[in-house]
Image (cartoon, rainbow, N blue to C red):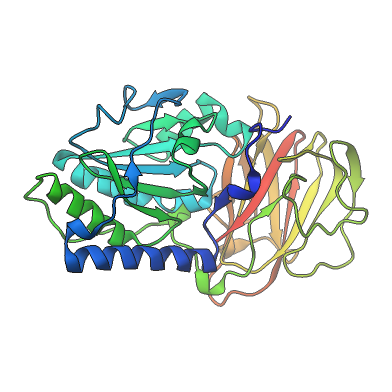
Length: 364
């Protein structure tokens, strides 16, 4: 059975690579410039705010409805907690919520999962707490809210005025100053006064830092066979069957391979023995891997290398200088953060314990 039933996966997209981000930023600049130069009235009315009734549960709030939110300016953020593109948007959402919540702004995070583990409420609650999200979170496990908004992207922002009308949208990362300016205009339209119109001062760090787009040459790469591409082990991926894989003798850029006994499913690959490995030849400042223990309540130790050596100063936040780390919960792990100049490198991860589940590589 498909993880999300009849959902069309070709419509479910992250906005993360350079070309898509450029398009999203251009959209934001055009909309904002129009509003700033000709007034709030120039913002179009894109439709009424859709229902929020499909949430499985609400975190940080009682259930909210378009009717109960009338009189408030609402920013709806479709996100999922293992998505690097969503994660890099969060510092701005936290800052805007803090700055404008007393002026009539309500931010609602709609957690719409991509992977099965993102449906688990304990995992979602952990992510909300770990990511320091104090605004209301609607857990949209069945994508009912996603479908009500006819949404297609992670992240996606919908700007709703005090009369319950969608006045702007922003798909993908970027355009933050423009987005904040539109929030300010909608707040002024609703009667808010006395707030600082200087854009919020935000310097994201660690995993939330913006991607190094100019040096990013590696794409998001799924491990599950439903969306897997550029797999280089001989014989290809075997669907839903355990098989012993081996690395090829050499690896071209953006190709990846498995070693050891793996069972590759639609959304992930699982190894139930220790000593399994994955290799990926990449070109990016940051390398992330969404993974976790396949058996709840266990942990999986791992060790990474870059071009056959310990990462030392290029290690990410989830490994030490020798490349050692532990997967405790299913989430996105930052394994590599390089310094300039960025070049092609061969990344390898070895799992020192059994029962690991691996989902997708992302880069920044």
